[in-house]
Amino acid sequence: MVSCKAKKKVVAVTSTTPQVGNTVSIPTTTPDLTYLKNQLAVIKGHQVTFNTFSGRANTKLDVNGSSNDVTLNIRIARDKKIWVSITALLGIEVARAVITPDSIKIVNKLQGVYLKKPFSYIYQYASRQVNYKTVESLLVGNVMPELLTENSTVKTDMGNVQLSGTLQDLVYNLMLGTNMRVTQFNLTNTAEQQALLVTNSTFIQADNRLVPSEINILSTIKDKKIQAELHYNKVDFDLQLDFPFNIPERYTPAD
Image 1 (cartoon, rainbow, N blue to C red):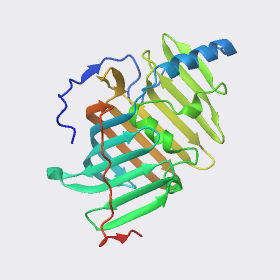
Image 2: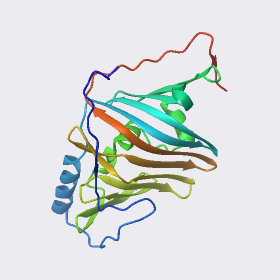
Image 3: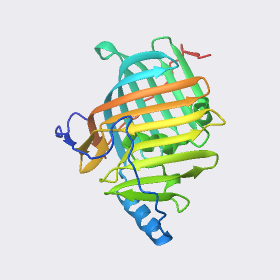
């Protein structure tokens, strides 16, 4: 569908940011409001902007202990929809999904079943502060828009930035490297046993945008867990994309 476009060279970018499992030690000084506003403006200026995004990622996907190695073909129409095709061995498509701000639709081609739910279905695996824009931001390495407010606390050290605070009943802590790209993001609600941990390691340059090529997402709520380890090997921006999705008549609703 997009193969007519010349293949782009994907360049790995060396980063001084922390790797998986590491943290950055940040001084505990409290910045004034002007400093906070300036830092937020810098962070916003480094967010990836786009109309469409497409990426292919080798992925280790674990849902409640059931683990599979798959390939995710991801397409995004910014603020509108996320389309995902899941392929297994030999490139056979086993599932397809479309996520919009108000709905989730999935077809399981192996079992001949489908799922049509409101977006709130995701709250079985994530906290209620997670919305469509959260998912979209995580897939391209952006900061959740809700965190870029003056309610946040900003601390810096040698160009690295820590953004922290509370989002309703959740505590958040976000690390950005010297390139102002997210390296680690943590949302927790201990009382409700909810947690979201995202770690971005290696970054790549694609269409003059800096995006993470390795994304580790772990979302838990009580005894339910989803973990996805994505490794992008192809990324494009602002191509003309299709988002084909249909539910065959013979498919039955999933339990």
